[in-house]
Image (cartoon, rainbow, N blue to C red; front, side, top):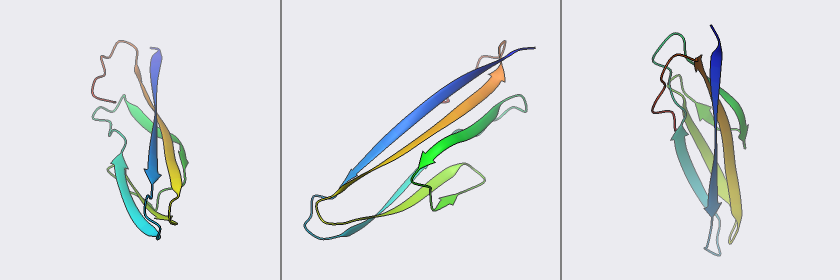
Amino acid sequence: MTNDSLRNCYKITLKNLLPTAALVTVEDHIPIPRHESITVKLESVRPAPKEQSDLNLLKWEISLSGESEQTITYEYSVEHPREMDVTGVL
């Protein structure tokens, strides 16, 4: 039995248009496998999230100085048997 792998990468750009500092909370998630033959792995993430829950929820708290910008990027892979039709991983 051979496996296929899907990879997804996301980029979230935060911009503080105010002249003063701001604390921003960002929450996102990666898929949760619903079958024992499917695995989901967080491959890379920058900056590191403050929290990652058992339900694959990611949470960042980003401090942005006045009129600044920061980017959050993360990539995950989904591995599954080739003959299995996998949907809803985007």
